[in-house]
Amino acid sequence: MSTNYSVRESEKALQPLQHIFSLDSEFRLESGRKLSNLSLAYQTWGELNEDCSNVIWVCHALTGNHRVQEWWDDLFGEGKCFDPEEYFIIAVNVPGSAYGSTGPLSEELPDEEKFDAFPVLTIRDMVNGLELVRKELDIERIHVLIGASLGGQQLLEWSLLIPEKIEHIIPIATNLKHSPFGIAFNEAQRMAIQADPTFYQKQPNGGEAGLKAARAIGMLSYRTYEGYKITQSEENDEAFDHFKASSYQKYQGEKLAKRFNAFSYWYLSKAMDSHNVFRGRDKKIVERCRMPALVIGIDSDLLFPISEQEELADKLQNARLIRLQSDFGHDGFLVETETLTNHIKQFLKIN
Image (cartoon, rainbow, N blue to C red; front, side):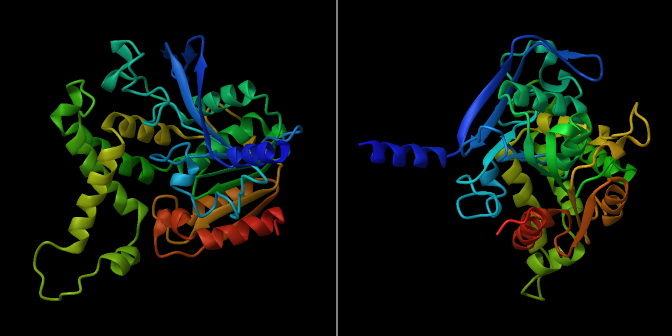
């Protein structure tokens, strides 16, 4: 009986578990505003060691979530780079998102905090939320902190806040301060959302048509000329309308609209724009991060160009820079997972 019970417990530990953290008091924001309620959805996967030596903490990207197996499944899972048999894997859905954490559509919020009246969040606000969950779980040691894009921005802010508790960091396709070019791309997407009059009608599907257009704009910054050439070229040279690339853009907009909402997209893009680790700090603040760092940039990334990863690696005290080759631009961190795995294993000396 005991053997069978142990097997069942082991199998259960290999299944991702969903949790909700709720704050009993107001959550004050960097802007000076507050959220009257804060809930954070998060996932744990695997068993935590007594000394917290096996914690892998994942920070998700803009439209990602805490269920890492849904969007980074080539890196996380049984027999993969980060195996729940060996590691305790945790990810938190950031505030403002659409996957269970407090956001613009949360029913528990008062009307003055919902829809387009939701307060503007910053990356630092998100990291303060991560800290609440870390303290709730009494995790005093993070073996590896990994994140890409907006997730990488959270990683860097958090590494500056608690450098003594993080053993390794893997920032991917991210930056120390969001660029004017990146802000301009995000503003173009928000303009598309705001051009949809339903965005201001305080309804859950408000701005849906605008969101689809915004996603189509965003795809141009996530991919590349070569990437579209590889995947969306016409087989029929006689075509003069209804192109594959056109259908692809519409498909991406429809796909996102089925799982996300315009308000979360608007506010999370604002949070990305806010990212600046130097705001209100000494310019040498990054030197606080002395833990080993594997900085990964993508050579074709339009949104977070390789020069930003070069700057990051230069300022960190113990960094190794990897220039990942990909035809798929910023989305290369989701596509080139075999290469990513090899570099990560080498960095962490995983067999």
